[in-house]
Amino acid sequence: MNNKIAIFVWISFIFAITVSSCKEKATPQKAEIISKLQASSKLSTVEYVVTKVISAEKKRLLADKYFFAETKAFIKAGIDLSKIEEEDVIIQGEKISITLPAVEILEFSYPPNAFNVVEEYTSSNGPLDFNTISLSERDALYRAGEVDIRNSIKSLGITETAEKNTRFFFTGLLKNSGFNEIYIKFKNHEIAEK
Image (cartoon, rainbow, N blue to C red; front, side, top):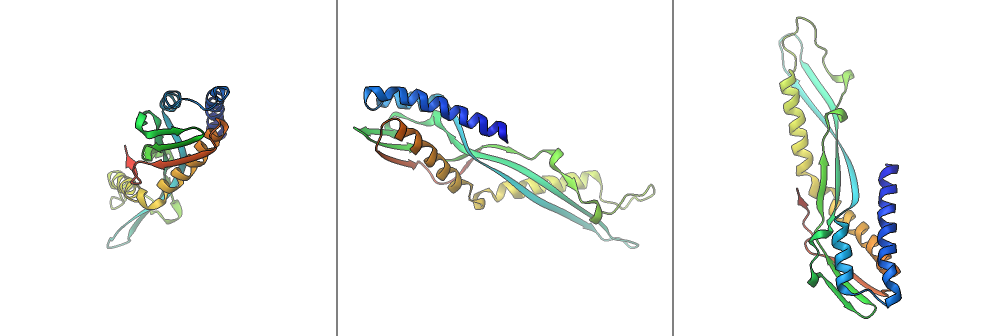
């Protein structure tokens, strides 16, 4: 996590220096701002770790079989600055209005090394035990867990958090660039997934 913070701070620092170097010319020109924003490409402003517990039960004559596991998905959201167009930036003296692209999922990972079988609640497999929950059934449970997490993304508040963080980030940068009045909005509040 420290590497991510360091990278974010480094990118912010470079961007702030680049934009603030235009300060000597009063406020930056529209073309300069658009060019610098587009060059920044994708800006991740929020990262969520979602934990999902998956379970299964098989009814058997002699003994029921159970499977429990904890899984994790890592979700990064932000904006793709390369999608900013000329009409998205309006400058009037020391006042700037920017319409940023919609928040989108920039990265979604559901790595197998983040799956943890809860042995305490999972039936153990004996050498002659053919009624257990098979590997293919476990794989199907993991896939269903991923689908469930993807389906719940909109209800997690990722869009709102990413917009808030992005607005905070750009307000600071634009104030350092000499703008006194800053208006930031987003093209679409519906989160886009890749």
